Image (cartoon, rainbow, N blue to C red; front, top):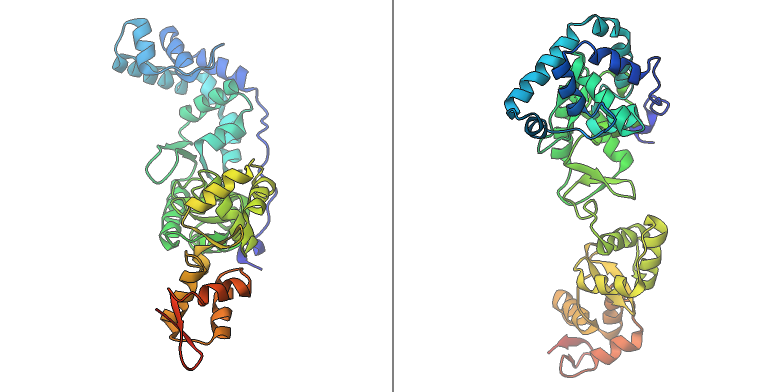
Amino acid sequence: MVKALKMKKQAKAVTAAFSFDSSVLTKQLLSAAPERAREVLVRRFGLGSNPERETLEAIGDRASITRERVRQIEAAGLDAVRASKAFKEAKSAFEEIAKYISSLGAIVPEEALLAALGKDEKTRNRFRFFLMLDSSFFRERETNDFLARWHIDHATAKHIHDALSKLYASLPDTEVVPEGKLLDLFLDELKNVNDAYKNEEVMKRWLSLSKNIGSNPLAEWGRTTAPAIRIKGVRDYAYLAVKRHGSPMHFSAVAAAIGSLFSKKAHVATTHNELIKDPRFVLVGRGLYALTEWGYTPGVVRDVIREALKQEGPMKKDEIVKHVKQARFVKDNTILVNLNDPRYFKRLKDGRYSAV
C-alpha cells in the first residue's frame, strides 16, 4: 500500500455554506463607498444586475475618463470600504471565508475556489469582492508555471510552490506514473507542510495549481508535455487504450475501448486510419496493433526476419519462426513463404538461413 493511502483520510471538501448572506453583506459594504466609487466597484466586480465584470478601459470610456483614473477611483473605493464600520462588523464573515479556504488546503486555484464559493456568477463575483477587500487573503497572479491562486498563509504557499517545482523536476520527460506513486513522490517534497493538510484530496488540489503537471483519464500522472498526458484526439485516446490493455489489440477493439473507457465516440475506420499514421503503433498482425515502446519495430514479416538475422546471424528455420512470432502475430506458413523467397534470403549448406 502506498504512503498516500496511509495518510490521514479527510472527508471531501466541505460545501461552502456560511452564516451570512453574501448579497446582504455586499450591499452593506458598498454603502460605505462614495457614490462614484461605488458605481465603479459594482461594474468592476459585476455586483449589479449584470454579472459581467467590466475592464478599466470600458468603464473609462463610458465615463470619458482615463483607465488610470478609473483605477484610482476603484482603489479609493476599496480603501473607503476597508475603513468603514460595516467592514469591521463583517470580521466574522471574513474569518469564516478564511476558515473555509484553510479546509481546502490554505492555497487554492482561483477558479476552483470561486466555483466552490458560489454556484452562480453573481455569487462568485461577490466573493471575489470579499477576497479583494480583506488583507487575510492573498492573490498570486498566473505565471508560466502556476495558475492564478488564492492563499491565506505565505509560508505554506511557498512550501507548496517549491514542492511542486521539485516534483516536476523529478518526473521523466515522457513517461507517466500511477497516481499512488505520484502522491508518494509529492508527499516526500512536503516535509515542511502542516500534517493537517496531508490528505489525498488537498494534495490533488495542490497538484492542480501546476501548469506543468497533469493527469490523464486513467489516473496516470506526468509532465503536461508527455504524450500520455497531452491528449488531443483519437490517436492519444487510442494510445491510452492499448497501453491499458497491455497487449496488441485489433483496431475495432481499440475503437470500442475508447468509447467504454473515455466515453468518446470513435468510428472504427477513423481509429484504424489514425493507428496507421501514428509511429507509436506497429501493425503486428491482421488488424492488430502494438505499441512501439513495447519493443516492436515497424515493417512487414520480411523486415522482421531480416532484422533477426542481422542481430543473431544465420539461424535455422525453427529459430527464425520463433523470433518472428515474438514480434508478429502471424501464421508459421506466412513466415516460411517469406523465408523461402530467394530475392531476400538463402538457405546455407548446414540448413541455416541468411539474408541475401
